[in-house]
Image (cartoon, rainbow, N blue to C red; front, side, top):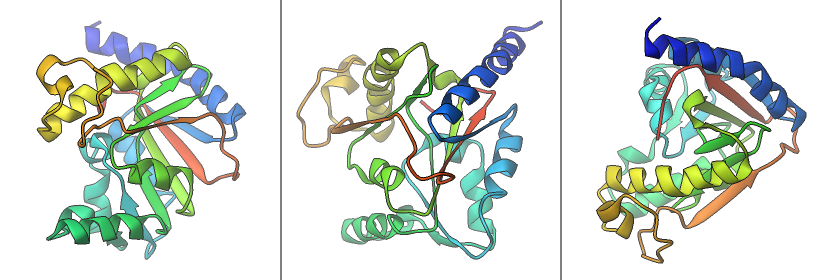
Amino acid sequence: MQSGEIIKQRYKIMAPRIIKALQDRNFEAYFCETAEEGVKKALSFIPEGETVSWGGSLTIHEIGLTKFIKEGNYQVIDRDLAETEEERIKMMRQALTCHTFLSSVNAVSEDGIMINIDGMGNRIAAIAFGPESVILLVGMNKICRDRDAAVTRARTETAPANALRLGLDLPCTNTGCCFDCSKKECTCSQIVEMRRNRVPGRIKVILIGEAFGL
């Protein structure tokens, strides 16, 4: 068996325990072995004609979900189409009241705590409150042993990698490590710990048995 297949098998074995942990925290949770299955599952929760938007997430782009949404029968709020920064911010605010918000998370502990790190804060704001429905697609590579390990992953792995991806002039882009900086463009200005979903059915988590996102 090739290494990739071994990792996928491990993800499949781990998934039921993570699903149970998320459900115990009142999140709807599902496991899909492939990206294609994950996209189909996500689309099954989005009625045609509804307003859909998303936060900064490599995962939802990598698996092709945003492509399906753009080509489907939905009203889309896509901040990347903004022609000015002012228009971009306006669209971010509009996304807070859309019907369905798509995103991912930066890390998930084995006992179901999800950690998100954000620069502007629009993504974590929408996930926490606003849109009627939130769908989070998460590669199993983001599963961490516990809450502290999840925070460490978000700070020391995700934040520097995203800063590099965005071409920001930050200490972490020069060293690859977090320096707890206070720079204007800091990608980890806000860190949110999601330990429970208060509104039944609002937040759905789709774990994907492959590696996606940073």
